[in-house]
Image (cartoon, rainbow, N blue to C red; front, side, top):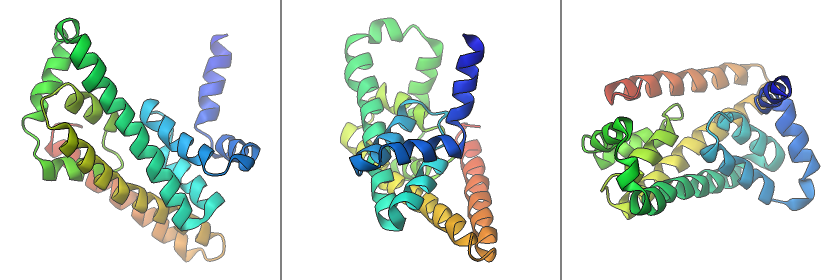
Length: 200
């Protein structure tokens, strides 16, 4: 049973798995690509950059971006509202006993809107932590969601560009260099910014 679970989790990280999944649900239109990107917000180990690249491959640059962004935005909103409207409202007396949750709540007080936007833009930021920390904080709900949606639109656009570059590299290997440069740049900036905000 344990081996089967490990094998299944390993498959989730392969491009072939997502490719087969998309092909199997082609008739459902945009529903599957949106849901795939949405599920990543709930289950962070899923490779979002692979999902976005897959959506771009299946639906083209523009629609791939739109479907991916809608999924990321919906998933992030659901997770944030779960922490804000459910945990904080009904279970905070119990949850507040956790030192980790208290530290997460205190961390938010050192983050302004501009920094939040940058954290939302950078693809290697632990977004699930952002939803948790801001969800249990007193940070303005509307401001968080608008900043998140704006930041994630830029992040998904960068990922879509990465995916488009990978597709183009099949015809012209020069684009592979561009794809690697985009990936490396996103990773380097993400690590630096996360370290600055104690998220490394």
